[in-house]
Image (tube, rainbow, N blue to C red; front, side):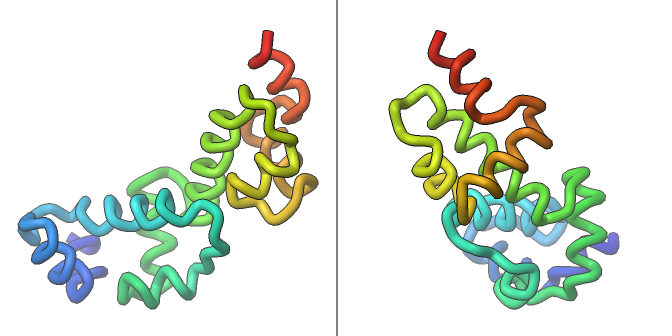
Length: 130
């Protein structure tokens, strides 16, 4: 119920675009996930996200985490890591993979990769290329 009220204005807009009704509270979260996926390389702030989807940031944080199990930023980071994993089997330099996946430098990328995957990007790449 709370999700239905959280994004009522933006949800109405999204409903008109998709033809879905207000009884589908998953709609806004699907659009937020798509928004992230389409903008992996961009810096996305919580304030920007709230402006775009016309919502309160504290409600967004709480309800996004209830919906996905992750905060919006951690969800975005996980998408970026998945994108990086896809690029690891190419011959692209790790710094380029980091940038194309939305990380602002290789160090930042390596730290998150190790934290989420449990391997360094170099070790992951070696296993991928075998």
